[in-house]
Image 1 (cartoon, helix red, strand yellow):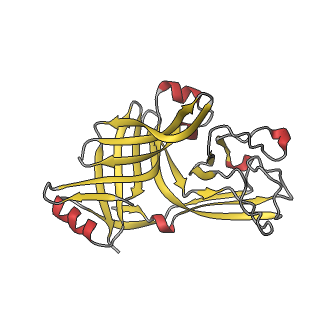
Image 2: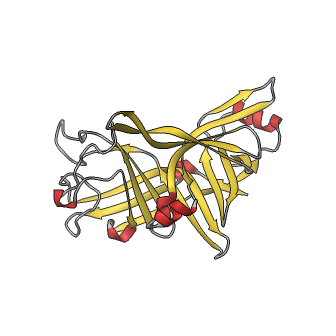
Image 3: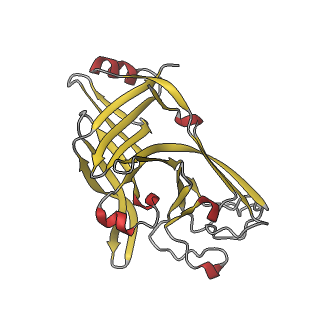
Amino acid sequence: MQIPEFQQSYFRFYLDFEQRQALSVSHKPPTRTNRIRVTLESICRLTHRPSDRSTTYALSAACRTERVGAGRNQLWIEPNAACAFVCSDDGQVAIFKNWHKRDPGVMLYPESLGPQPERQSFRSEENFDETALEIAMVDATLLQDFEQISEAILGTQPIISRIEYSDDEFDVCIDQPVKTINLAQRDRLQQTDTGPIILPDLSAERLGQAGLEIDVFDLAFSAWHASDWAEFVIQAPLELADGVSINHYSRTRHVEPTTNTLWVATC
């Protein structure tokens, strides 16, 4: 069996600003080109059983909005946003941006493109000159009982969580590095608490609203301590006061049945 090696897996993209107008920036780029490498946080494979179509989606690590190559005291854009990319092995890309509040009025560049959206999706060729999704795989061993899981938690080898389940016509498989895990030895229990991941909403309503399949994903954290169910806390709009809302991990979802497993690399 093989699992992803997240620290050696990347989403890469390239922009030549002399050849195209980027659709996703909020300032005039100081440089003529930009080539980006960003590690991955999680991977989700969606398999549509009726068509036997399988697509791999990946969530990048988060960065902050910046001006690459700007002068002193100009590198960070204000108001600053957290920025993460979702990409697929068939050329779909989505950009998630979160500011201190929802809809802060940050404009795209040039401003004739309108306000910068919190979520923006497109085919890769519509915004980038090159893209690549590189997922490194390593041989892995399944942790089969509490003793093996305990030994792994007390050790130093990276642990990978895999959550698998079916949702109507789709099979879902989510892989993520276990950044945080709890171990209650007297109770013979371990519980993951880790993220972010991308979690698909495969309801008929969400699928009907999606321009691209990549639009069905939300950011979430996962937790599980049993092998057959898991719970997620999902980033969603949360109203703080009249007319003021933020994106916050505030909506929970229980999925059952699932198949949950933990893995460690064998090399």
